[in-house]
Amino acid sequence: MNELDWWIANQWEMFKVKDGKSGLEFYRTDKEGNILTIDRSPKWKKLREKTELKEMYIVRYADDFKIFCRDYVTAKKAMYATKLWLAEHLHLQTSDEKSGITNLRKNYTTFLGIKFKVVPKGDKWIIRSHIADKSKDKVINKLRTVWKDIKNPSKQSEIDKNISLYNSMVMGMHNYYCMATMVSADFAEIAYKVNGKSNGMNHNNRCFPITKTGEITSKFIQQKYGKSKQFRWIKGRMIIPVGYVAYEYPKYKRREVNKYVRKYSDIENCISYDVMKYMMGNAHLYPTLEMADNALSRYIAQKGKCAVTHNALSITDMVCIHIKPCKGERNDTYRNLIILSKDVSKLVDATENKVIKKLLQNLTLTVEMQEKNKQTPKIQGVGRNTIRGLYRH
Image (cartoon, rainbow, N blue to C red; front, side, top):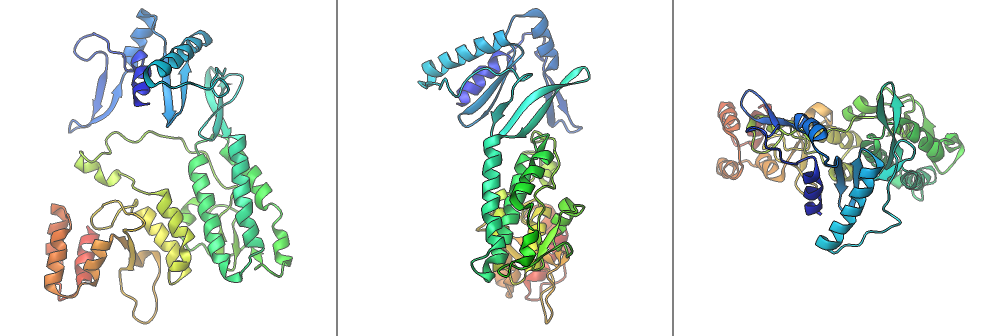
C-alpha cells in the first residue's frame, strides 16, 4: 500500500517541477540548519495555473483510505484510475459497496470512527466532524457494561478495579475522539445514556453511594478535568466525567522531533496509551490508591520516558519508586515519586561500590548526565544518591 501512497502523491502533491534548483520547494530551517517544514505552495500554485494535472491528496490507514479532490469530474477519474492501479499492481479488487464518491458539502463520510463534512463559514468552508454512528454505539455499550459492574458489583472488593477500568476507558476515548469538532456534544449524549440516571445508586444496598464532593489526588486529572462540575466520587475514588471533553486541533508530528537532532530529543513525547491503560487498570497492585494515581501523573509528566536515561518506558520495563525512602510514615505524593527503567532501579537498590560502577557502565548516559553524576556527593554504598544527582539534571 505504500506504493499506492507514492503513486497518488506523484500525481500532484510530490510532482516534480523543473524550475531552478529548488523546484519551487522551499525548506524552512532553524538557526542551525535543521529542516522544520517544506513549503510546496508556490509549486502547487503554478501547477494549477499552467497544467491540467488532477489535484488530489490521499489519507490512508492500513487498507482504509480516502482520496480528496476539488470536483466531481476529478474524483470520478481518480476513483477509476485507483481501482485499475490496484488491480494491475497489487492484484486487489475493491468493493463497490464500500467505495464511492461523496460530496462533502452535502453528505458525511466516515474514516477511522469519525464522520465529517464541510460547512460554510464566512467566505470559506470548514470541517464539521462527529463520532461515527457505529463508533458511538460501541462506546455506549462498552461504558454501560463497566458502569453496570460499578453500580451492581458482584464482589465489593472489585469496585476499585472496575472504577480504574472505567476511568481508563473514558480517558482513552477522550484522547482519540477529541479530534472531532463536535466531540463535546457527542459525549454529552453518551454521558446521559451511560450514567445519566445514576442517582439511584445511593438507594442500592449493593453499591457504595455516589457523592459530589471529594479529593482529586492525581495532578494530571486535576489539570485536565479539574474544572468540571460533573465529577463524582465513589468510596473516595474519582469517576472521570464522560461528558467533559473539548475539541483539540489534530497536528502533524513536529518534523524537528527526531533521533537525529539532539537538541529536540526532550520534546519527543513517548507516552503510550497501552501503558496508561495498564497502570489505571492495575491500580490495585500499588500499595495505596494515592500512589497509583500519582504514578500515572508522573509517567505523563516524564513524557513516557525514564527520568535518568530518557529512553521510552514499557509495561515490562518500568518501576515507580520513592525519591525519599519511606521510613515510618508513607509519602506517596506526586513530588516524592519517580519512574525509572528496571536497569536504573537496580542501581537504586545497589549498596556496593563495585556493583554501582558496573551498573553505571551498562547505562547509556550522556556527557551532561555523567558530569552531573561527578558533581554528586560520595556514593557511600548507596545508589540512591547517584540517582538523585542524575535526576536533577
